[in-house]
Structures are given as structure tokens and as C-alpha cells.
Image 1 (cartoon, rainbow, N blue to C red):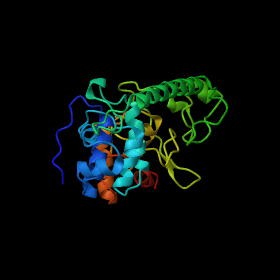
Image 2: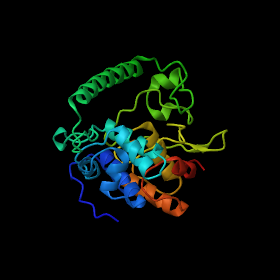
Image 3: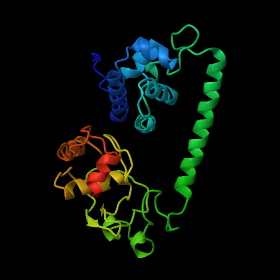
Image 4: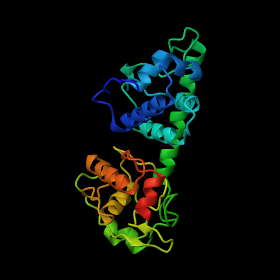
Length: 269
């Protein structure tokens, strides 16, 4: 088992979560950093930065680590996406490029230009998607991709979650407000599963630092099962993490404080 350096204190919890899982996968495989570099095409110095929280690994590096360690990349990629949304690590932490001909992690000039072009294209695409998401009317009745149709009419106009049907997904984009405790009305729906009315997801990956309607849903279900996570404010903090770990321990599933498909199965049951 590697003796890892302590992660930077200023590291965003969502980035920290990714790094911790990458470390676990690497340690479980028994590979050294040198062996990992040889199998992935990313230099040893690059992996040293990625696994010590000084640089955010690119998506391809995460996929390469999963292949090298013979593990399913799906969860790592989901955590990577959350870490990217968190803003990654400070620019001063160093580059995130794969090893170049000199093996020090610095890409050749041609590759640097391609990376810049791809980053600009990605930013433009994400901006367009964000604009579309904010301007698309919610009154279509479709709700969220993983939830039931949003309630329309008087309930939608009223605004607060208290005025919505128990199974209705909140029609407005989630905005975290400190100290706002959303009402929890958990009941068993026609699908035989428990619902609190904020999200119908059974697969969303939630971890410390997440702020979503799905977090409100999870907090209400945790409270229903006797593992109160504090107020149902939609922010995945320390108290919610502790409640998730207690639930996971009692359910005898992996205790990592992260809500994934297995934990949702317990919450919805």
C-alpha cells in the first residue's frame, strides 16, 4: 500500500473525492507509479501530480488508469466529470498533458495547439448547452431526464416545493440557499419505490460538495430511513456524508460516503 502525501487543504472536496478513488484503484492493482506510467503513456511525474492533487488528470488519463488497473472506468469518469465541474485545481499546480517524447509530461508544440483548439471548442459547446438548458421552457411537462414530468399550472406557479405533488420534480433549476430546509414527504409510488418528490433518479452519482435536487431527494430518504442528514437543503456536506456512511454500513454495501446505484437501491427500497 502506497504512503500517500496529504492532499492540499484548499483542494475542492469534489476533486479530492476523485483523487482518493484514483489512489484506491492504483493501490488495489499493486502497480507502482513507474509501471502505471508504462501502461498508460502518461509519465511518472504526471501521475505524481494527478495522485497528489496538484493537477487534474484529463479524461483519457482516467480511462487509461482504469484499463491499466483492470477496473470499470464508469465510476471514475463520473467522479472526473464532477471534479471538472468543480473547476479542477489551481492553474499553478502544473499541466495535465500526457507524456511527450522526453517523458516529462510536456506535450510537443503541435499537440499543445490541438489541445488549445479542443479546449476552446469544448468551452463553446458547454456554453451553448448551458444557454439552451436555461432558456428551454420547463412547462413542457417533461421535467428532468431522470425524473417524472414536472407539475404545471398552479403548483408550478406557486414555486415552493411544499406546493408540489409528492412525485413532481421541481420545475426550476436547483439554486442552493443556505439554511433552506425543503419539506420531506416520502411515500411509496406506483413503481413500488420510495420517493420524496425532488428527483426520480436511481443512478445519479452524488458526493461531498454536490448541490442538486437529487441531493434533497437523498437527504429526505435518509431521514425517512432513520439516518438524518440535517436539513434537506440540497448541499452534500459533512453531515450528509456521515448519514450516507451509516446507511451503507448497516446495509452492508461499500462504505465510501458516495451515493451511487447501490446506495440509491437501499434508499428507494
